[in-house]
Amino acid sequence: GYDGQFFYRYALNPFSIEYPGIYVDLPPYRHQRIIYPLLSWLISFNNPDWVPASLVIINLLALFGCSTFLLKIFKTYNINSSNLIVLILLPGIYFSTSRDLSEVVELFFLLSSFYYLQSNKIKLFLVFSILGLLTRETGIVLLFPMMAWHAYKNFKNQTIKSVLVFLPIGIVL
View 1 (tube, rainbow, N blue to C red):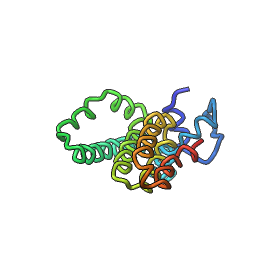
View 2: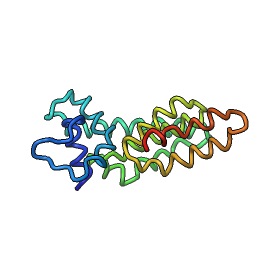
View 3: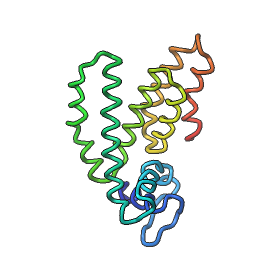
C-alpha cells in the first residue's frame, strides 16, 4: 500500500484497527507510525472532512519548525543562515508535503532532537527523539549515531546522562 493512504486512514481514527472501506495491509507496522496521523486527528478535531487539510497543515508547520531549528543549529555552529535555502530546494520536501507523507514531520523531530542533544537538554532530546521514532522508525539511522557520539563524548563526566540518551531505542523497540 501507499503510506499516504494509511496516514489518512489512521488520521480518521487513530485508535481503531478497523475502519469501514479502508483495508490496512500490515496493521502493526502501519500503526507504529502513529504521530503524524495522531496530530492530524487532533488538529481536525476528529472531523473527517478536515483531515486532508490537517495533514497538509501539519507538514507546513513541520517545515516551519525545520527552518527554525536549522537556524538555531546554524547559529550554534556559526554557519551562514543563507544555507537554509538548501531545505527549500529539496524536492523531497515538496513531494512529501503534497502526498501526505510523514518525512517532513520526521525531519522536524530529528532536527529538534539534534539541537537539544547538542544543547545538552537531555529531557527535550528524549521527548523529540521518541516522537521522531514514532513518526517514522527510519529516524533511528540518524538518531543512533547521535546518541552514540553523545554517550562517548560525555561518558566520563555524566555516566547516567550518557546512557540515558539510548532510552528512545528501548521504548520504541
